[in-house]
Length: 333
Image (tube, rainbow, N blue to C red; front, side, top):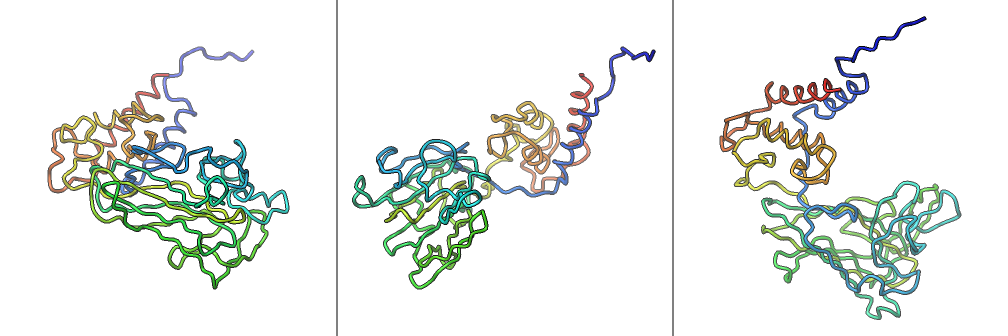
């Protein structure tokens, strides 16, 4: 008979060890640069979004072909021109494939209708951007249809909520055409595509970026849209404000504001691991390897002020804190 030991295992299990190696691999190389996300609205987990308003209000449109709201594939009624079902049907118009995009997004179509005679619609965000400058807006946009001259989807911004300046101004190329490719491989040529500058808005969600001039603590973003017809669709998602921290602002990872980035601050990240809160340095809704990497990139060590001109690269003490924490956790089993 084979005898099995009943002694408690003193080291980390293979599952724990593999997790540790995966975490270390995630955090390396330390020199990796992360984008500075300032604020965001992806309609799932907004970041530093102070307010969001839509005009006309949700529920104003009564026809299934008229769209102006947040949608999610498989949830509620969705105007058919938004959905790309070509992988399973003979669909020839659509942007969002339910097979690949399951999160929330905003759709706009046929806003000029009996419920809204002017066709005018407006979305307005207010974001907290305090502590950042050199801002830009990035938004993922998709569109498809034979657009008309009066259709518009214009993005603007303001520092006071009243005086709006241009960001992305749309235009319809009445002399052009574009061949849209659906998820099932169907190719659909259509006249009069929508453009931002020289770039065609296709049915593949694509990032469009524009710089934001000026500075302030609060930023307003506005989308003004008019869509005349149910055979044109406009979809967007993941509106992001990016920028650089003000030079007068302290390091993002100085969680206890003691003018040093050390093991205490790194411990805050680890104590919130997998959740939001104080350990979410990048403010993306989750404390993870990206937040730990920010701490390492700002590392000063205990007792060294962050006000020094040159912050040193993370040294062995930083890695010691990380590895010590991981070993302690693994040996607790």
